[in-house]
Image (cartoon, rainbow, N blue to C red; front, side, top):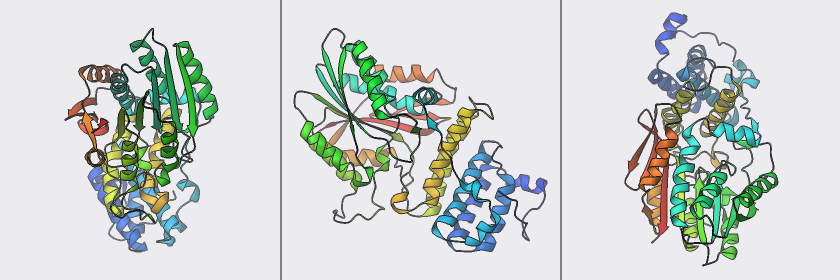
Length: 415
């Protein structure tokens, strides 16, 4: 971004700018900038942008990189929704483009192994699923996951080890990739199918792999209908939801021809309940990005997304390709939360407490994670930086970083 000329009343030296470097101050500057953009106060917005642009360096410390991502997202918002267009005269357009890497399967597997962000949910969910499918010879797993089946090999292996010697049929139904949402694959689901079916066969499991083109924008309506036609009382039906349900629209989006008392999320959960599943597992990030107020979303996102920026400093050096890919994904999330509205804003995280209430309203009851599950998660966390932790909240388990909630895992059965 090109440096903007200073305005009266704002610091003009690097020494003075240093006073603006702490996270609380940067958050306040971002909030003031957002308010200025929303109220079309171009003069004030430019003043704040100048300060932010000179303190939040894209190659600086974790707070600076986080703030830089929010700065770019605010400018992108001004472009996309037409406010403060004068700001764009001071910005190179190529600085607003968030590029995200397309992974090979090997790259994605290695990338996911870098942190417990996904592995926590994989480990906890697999343990709960294993207990739930005990005694079944046919297991149908509906994998609603943003991780492109990366959880499935470990689940196949665990099922084969637990139920060794018994003929097993594993049905796997997955929803095709969400277009434009990272992580993105440079690989087809047909190729994933071939690899998983081959691996399952090597573990003495017969696998039926189905890909369904379903749209989260309608609450996966077509998926539900196909599951109704495929359901069988003789098989274990597992609904595994890994960081995908938050893409379903919630109350802040008006939806035509739908009861005003139910959101698409609640309708989806009630539809799942009608299938009488053996177990439902929900894993997602423990934050709230649903507010219709930009400043509320900005504060919530800023006070959650510092975590991945902080963690990356513990295991990836500056300039590494994996660090670039890692931070590109965070930048994409920040831009979606800040720069978009309506159906284009798909990053609509809700906190665990809200999902718990939704599940209870849909006639599910929570089941706890056993000692074996907790032990497996702790063993997995030992492979990562010391800042990661695990805590139990009633029936649920929560991944933490330096004591702050990051990802939750919950398991449910029909009442």
